[in-house]
Length: 126
Image 1: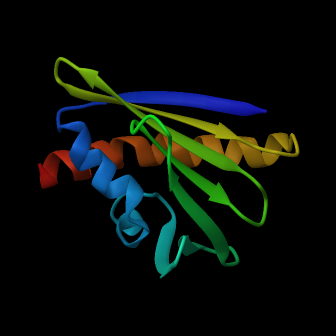
Image 2: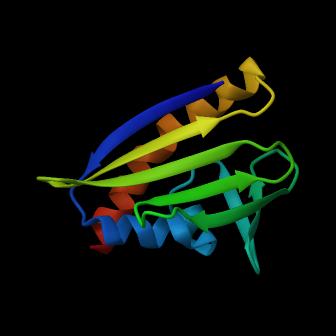
């Protein structure tokens, strides 16, 4: 099961990339993430009211994607950046590994809160 959402950002893609690829900056834009501890290959996220979530952050092969994988649930967030006349287009695809509809709904709500925050943080930084 998956969901996909997009937003247009007025900042260059490089500013969005910096926010997506640096787990220490997740609290600036990821709704509900109150604390992050970085690790060698990712981070441990501390979502509000939930247990710690070990996470891996990798760059996609084409240089346009950042993949954030939850190591406990195998949920995957694939963030794709594309050129747009106004800056860049940010698309996120969230894949819930076990088909848990309730968790997918929760992830969808989080994405809807986080996408505009990510765009605003990138615009502010740029």
